[in-house]
Image 1: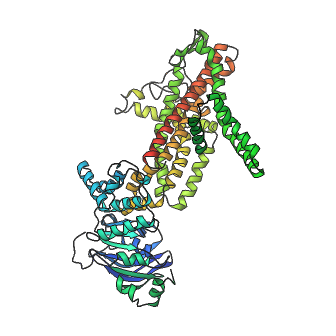
Image 2: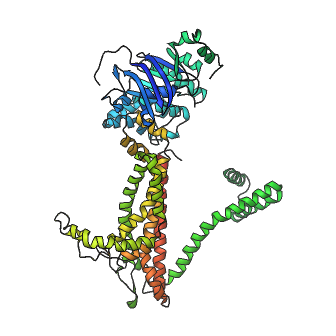
Image 3: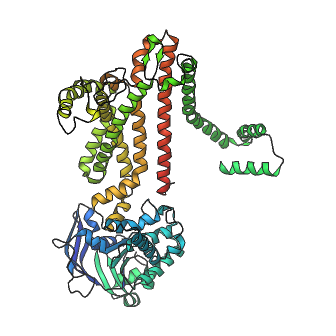
Length: 256
Length: 348
């Protein structure tokens, strides 16, 4: 991809998506600033995950998926002609709702991505594994047992391992799909802290249905309801003075 | 169960050490004491447990009975001066001269099984990967049905087909083609004239018979790999084939190992089809085109004549015993490898 002039790392214009004949997202336009955390909120089934998966084209795996509109990543339309989906996914990392470490050692879990993209030097891999684990605040807990299988870690450690794995290919953007919803409160708060730390170097887009969490970690927030982007602004503004009654209903817990 | 075992061992630590027999007796008595003290639902549960233990123990018992019986029947040949343990590597089988070397059958069986496994495992895994990773759903269902139907074809039918198709193919097309080609003709495993009945024909028909097992079981293992592992791999920028090879196959490897174990057992144990196409000639195969005699064939072919000659008969039972020991050995080795594979993947 050539480097073009751009103001925001990801810009979405009039994005609509369908699974078969079912329209999931309806004309969404928004943008994600460099080094910020954006929370995407909304009740279950409103299209949050679909939206996130549209940004790294993971929905392309579903045969019935269609989309219309423009998504610009660093100034370039990711659905445009000649755009490489593999290059895109390498530069937009993703963390899933359920921790999904590969059934291999902790080391191999993290080395998988860099090896995939042609890094085979043992010393550099070692350094990269250490660096990624440190960024994910997991290094101190696992540094003596890197050859232990990843799935043997606890749930919270597994999720941080998945974050480290996503960071291993050094993507500028990190997508997180409800990364703490399957974890206990202590692990969850560790990961929230981690998100705040990672903001310095990465642009994070976080899907959540937890309003408090969005308030704690995010700078911007988007509220999706039934596939529509109802509100998109600074998190503080949305949560303190929601402009739309549906947002207010969600924040106060009447829908969701 | 573990807790009970722990508590008994604790008790013995506290009290004075008991005799081993008393401990075993106490263990045996415990269910009856439990039964006496239990209420009605507890008693029904007790009978249920016993009822389920019987079939579980039965299979173990059958294996032990078969081993004992085979050992009992084959003991004469192992203890007699004509035989002895050396028959296992003895190259000459001639009951008329009291020579009972069964090494030739072991070599024949291993050669056939090696060809079959060497071809069926890579082909079968390839097919399974195609079915689970690349094949559209509409095609997968009929393909799987056909593969499972292949497994249900009686082996004698495979044998008939091999006799009419594979054997002439080797004689008329394959052998001349490789032997007249300067690139291959020097290789030792392509030497000798052939009438098609050969170790290669046995190996090929075994390959075809093993394929459905390998494909079906590997495919099950591959499809049970969670979708979210594939997604994690794609999200890192992996292509479909990288994901299939490095994530899905690696995750399913213990299951694929189970497929290999099953086919190994069948490869050395298969009788009819192999008997029909290997030529049944008493020689160790040095080339793919040499005829051979496998362990199962010799038992089937000669047991009828051998029954009145105790040593001959006993030698045939010895072949059966070694066959069983071989498959047990393969199974245990493979199980250990699978166990290790599951450990390194964090499944157990």
